[in-house]
Image (tube, rainbow, N blue to C red; front, side, top):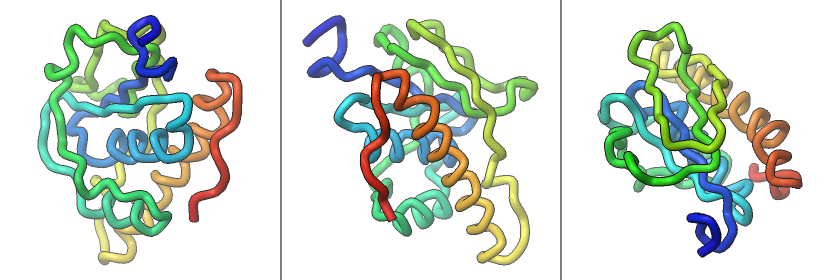
Length: 154
């Protein structure tokens, strides 16, 4: 282990309020697209459940997060992270703060679990969030580690 990292990988923690959608999607995408350079985890202020819509839209692109569970940020206290990324709207009073990161990044994404409508309309919200998070990972996070995300996952 080097500098607290597993095999030299940068450790990243994605934080959100319920650890049910955005942070779960970000964890799954980071591990799938950049797993050679990053080890991603996710947590929330309150542990709830992983949204079925998040599981479904990730499966559409070949990433299985069905075994993920919602975790409280308390589970990670004392663990070192290179990056701590909050993905909720910072104006939310319960958007978590985690003091254990070498670098804190805030990047708000719309909460797909707040969408209402038909099943297909709700899934479209999850797809938009997934795609926006993926673009951010490919264009911002991956370059911090000196490279690009791996090839397409479709």
